[in-house]
Length: 95
Image 1 (cartoon, rainbow, N blue to C red):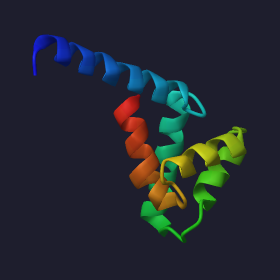
Image 2 (cartoon, rainbow, N blue to C red):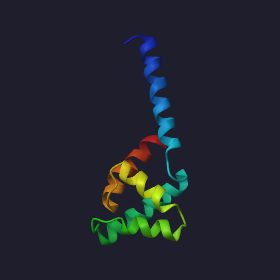
Image 3 (spheres, rainbow, N blue to C red):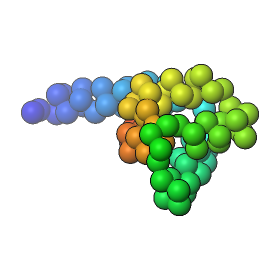
Image 4 (cartoon, rainbow, N blue to C red):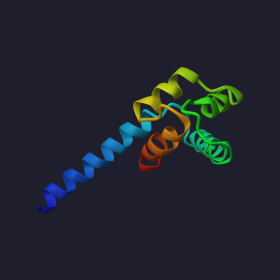
């Protein structure tokens, strides 16, 4: 791979990261708060294969439920533990 190809690849990666950031449903700090809260509850109580802790956080923080849940599902977050394993990982890689 020559320098031109490396630069193109780097530019493409930056573009993809920007697209992912622009698609985040809420701010970075709110996502961080949501994932930390959900993680603590899953650790303490366990996952019941729903998004109950996530939905609770969304309601308590008056965030757009449909937008957040859709984004989580788009990134493999169909329950609280999957949201932490999959969607949080996507967020971490692109924040």
